[in-house]
Length: 118
Image 1 (cartoon, rainbow, N blue to C red):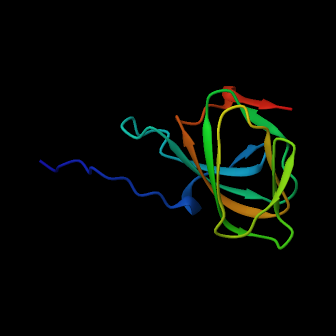
Image 2: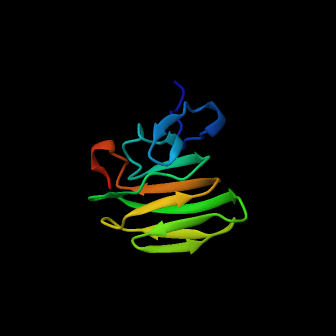
């Protein structure tokens, strides 16, 4: 009898994209009960819609972005570059400004009902 794998591998190029306020998200690990988060690769091609989460904490890691890319965090526009990492706790209004591809770690697991557009 074959042992089940104790690990998971995701190829984000094989994960279907889902429209979100930021652009197109490719979400992984939602189906893994023992993993307390989801991981998203999100492609942002224009300015995202401002939003916040009631209970979710998101951590953005910028994989690539345009030279004028910024993040709006509450009332502040923060310049960002590839390699920047931002932890966004519940209640912080945020959006990406400009083109970028980000890896987003969401704790607990992403729930669309937790997302509030401003």
